[in-house]
Length: 127
Image 1 (cartoon, rainbow, N blue to C red):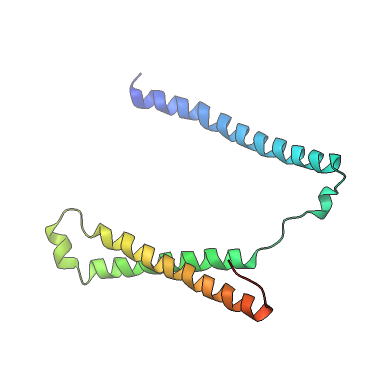
Image 2: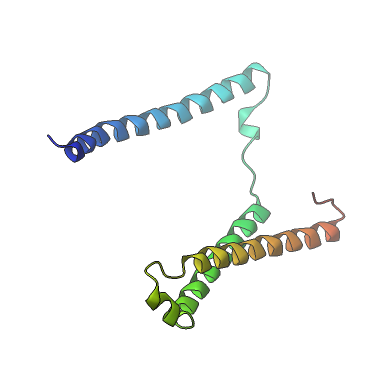
């Protein structure tokens, strides 16, 4: 058997085992956490995960910014920098990373500004 076939067989064995181990570990740790809460006299039903609207806003603006940067990099690469990328084999890879970082960072900055404005309105402190 060649090397690729051996890796395919190993992947067919290891991936399901890893998936089972991960699910088992998550369930085991969740039950262990609930038992520890009961031992300390706490009610596990009272502690439910609370929604985090600012976390959702942060991820949404980050992904919108990254997508906008990727789209703008694609448009610039295929219009403005088309002559340059024809001469090079690699093209303009750096512009993709740069614009994704710039627009993703601006999305995070916008999220911070929105959170700060909301916290100032409510009289809270933002870290």
